[in-house]
Image (cartoon, rainbow, N blue to C red; front, side, top):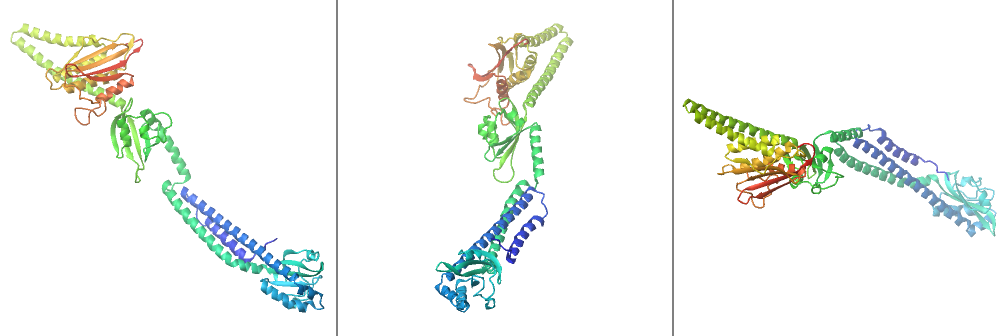
Length: 550
């Protein structure tokens, strides 16, 4: 069944199309991602609303036409089944008897026309009496065969939905009845519904646009007004920077879970596998370092020890209010700390040499004065005794240790200790490595032995009869380094190798922690114990590699 386009339908289509086109073409194309999504979503909302409105209108019109068809059919069948109609058809003037009856039925049934006609199509009734006697405009063939049918046809009242049914008398078709409702009347009935539909569509479009604007305003804040190309380029730079930077970078969310860690950060912290989503406490890091990562306040250039590295940590909370997360940077301070230790030892050597030079000058003045006093024999005896004492110490250390770096370290530390009133001796059971043994790197040996001796000297300064005993020897495939003193000993239950533990005040406590780290780095062990007659004894065992050189 064809649906003619009415002026009301055209007006509704123009309204919905105009709303959609104004959204699509009136606003300039935005550059930001949020703006592009906003425009796209508004267009989609407009199209959905327009489509739903058109569908609702079409459905309402189809239902109205079906209702009109049922209404007209009921009126036509009621007239055809009326006995008075059959009796009037048999009379000499059917029009006179049926016109008033047909108009009354038309008014009562709410249809626009009820036409009763002869079999040849000549009208007996019509809403316009002037049309009585004229031929019926429309199809009557199915009704002549005894069938009831409906159609949309343009008659004297304009386009209408009509139902045509036969009037039968003893099984014989004697007349035809047509009842119908004009399309204009149906459109008038839909006018109120269409106005309501337009307002609902406009409200839905406004609500959809407002909701879309609110969502995209939030998106614009999160994307900082950047478009898709800028976000993609920023991501590419972000990935390149993460892999190119030499410092370790660790990003934590508000629950202190790992959201990002770069390659350098994995290497510095000794982390492997998938880390995203793991809590800081689950990374297996040392307790002080874990505590620093869990802290809420910023950290600036703080030094921490991992399994085999000295790390400088900086952390800063993510701005924006609330516990949003933390950004942590890590720098490898291991080499720098080692070099700093060596520099401290060299500075100590320099001070020792300066002191020795000052002492040698005093002794030289003594020898010169004895000669000037005519006591040459006493001068020779005094000078010989001093030379023998110095040479004896050097020979003792060289013979017992052998390693040039350790020899230099011990001679320098002996001079420093002597300046502070502490005697440093190498025990008789010390001996050199064999040619088949390869010791750990000399730098780590300096770190271990130098820090142990410095710690002992600091503990003994000002103690009468202070003495430090150093043992260096291979033993059971390991290099034994032992430093014992006769000082006050160790506090009960103290973890002296923990970073930060120190008896010398705040900001200290790194030396013994570095000793343990160096030992663990080479698979060795470190221990501290009380000496039977008082004092402390530190023992480090480092595995020796069996090789060609020693």
